[in-house]
Image 1 (cartoon, helix red, strand yellow):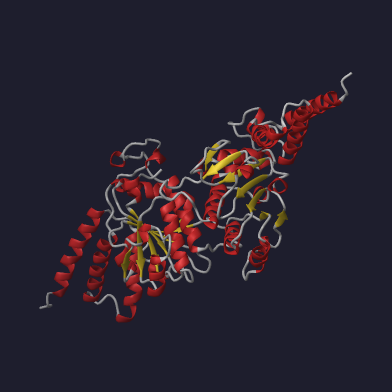
Image 2: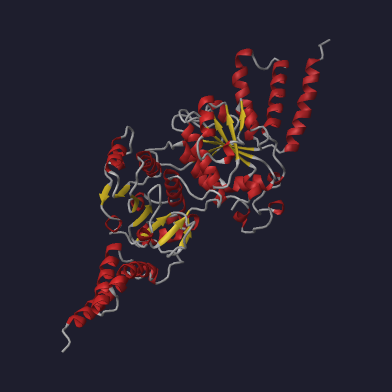
Length: 261
Length: 261
């Protein structure tokens, strides 16, 4: 079972939600399972206002943060969980069934990190670009005949799973999370992971290096940026690795920019 | 994970649903998790028609059975699970948190029984009378500040839990259910339980005996009927016990009715 401070480190992020009833339903599910942190990316303003002012709207909707981009909404999160069903495309990141997600969440919370659980718009779900910011894609184990879930119901199911399967009690210890040390942890897993904005800084720097090294032709820059974002999340760097890589690429960039004599 | 034949033995029962959108949301959640059997008790006809004819309504809504009473809707079920939150009253039957429900469901399915998962109306939930037909009350572990869930979301969470936590794989065996023999099973648990209508027949007979024995004054008959229904479900009789009790009370009744000479 998740503790209250753990729940406060789990952010529910809605990308471009449209239907105010769905926004309300997500907020309601959050309140049902004791989650309080909602962030909303680029909502359709009239509907967002309507959802927040609805009679009986949970208090947490009033405190919801609004951002212009997904990158900004998840900047301080070290584990970004995308949701959705993959019917027509292949995933570019690891896919984890919802009922197998708990160990990942428990480890991340045990390292004191923040987590984002990201839902796409009702119509299209998360775009390929949105997903490139996610460490894993969480798949709700639905029936192949009717895979796609209603937003409010998908949120309820995910939050119920997090609330009941994740957290200290997974290890059977029940001890305070700062002393949590599951036997399954690898040496690397116990070190904090970089936040999303740290990875974005590293990513931009590597892009600059590519340009300076004339590695990346102009037409390939979009595709390279996308792949870079994915690779950095797939590598499972810890925060120290990420700082070291930053130092190295800064040095490389400076050297590359020294006019050749 | 539940197998398809197991899912077909789990009936979702809606008692007096009103909002067609909620009916649709429950049907959608059923389709998402591969459940097909819906039974509806005494629905408000115009809204029931509307829900069934809605564009994109899952096929299972068309095959839903309609009954006039809850007793009839659950007649062939041997494990009846009521849902809801108890805020103002004390439960008259065992309360099981949803995330601890799986062993009970797995055992019942392993005995080849049918199960009913019963949801009350959006406004009032299940009445005390409805609950007297339930073997256990399932409680979704929601936050005390916001315990009450939207019907469609509650159904999604319950069905997700059943689909992922119950079934053969719980025992780690993965064998066909007719060979399922979890170590935890007691001798009694492996025998089939009586169906709800069998218990109702026994219950009516005991009532007749009470009247014939002048045990139950007229003013107490309602209360006694209620308690009898609860007790018979709490006793965890197997089908053979129930047949034996039926034989005994039939004999008693015949004897009581012989005019005293």
